[in-house]
Image (tube, rainbow, N blue to C red):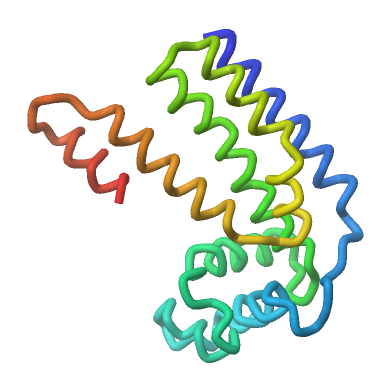
Amino acid sequence: MFIIGAIIIITIIVSLGVSWLARGIIFEGINHDSYKQVNAAAHFSDWGGWPSGMQQFASGKAWMKDVGVLLLVLSQLIFKDKKGFYPVFIVSNFANAVSAILVFLVAQSYWGTNIGFFLFILYFFCFWPFQIVLVGGLQGIAQMLFLLSIYTLQQTEQVLSLSNITLFTVSG
């Protein structure tokens, strides 16, 4: 139990530190995908009541990124920023942090606590995920959902029960 607490604390500290350092971050350019996704999320009230309404504001850059744009709407509401890049960065950073914790949980289930901790450290202190975070890539969200799916499937039992049905539903 100590190790998962330590992993969560390390993840929170590093993620908050990276968020603080990047608070003035800007778009790479006006034609960047993130700019178009911010525009789509900013028009949330104009979607017509359906999440698929985001497509008309994203210039084709929200296809297959619907969950990312929906999380971006929440981030924009929290930070009250519908034009800046920082909410995109926060969504990517959040997905990276949750993915790091899920890497530990999934690996711990397969190979034990020591290997799980090693893989957490290997993933969380690798440059690649943070490069994706810094450019506002939404690949981390797909990775987070994939790891969540694996983790929920690992929690199921051999008998059919309401909890298993719930876990199968959450897994996708």
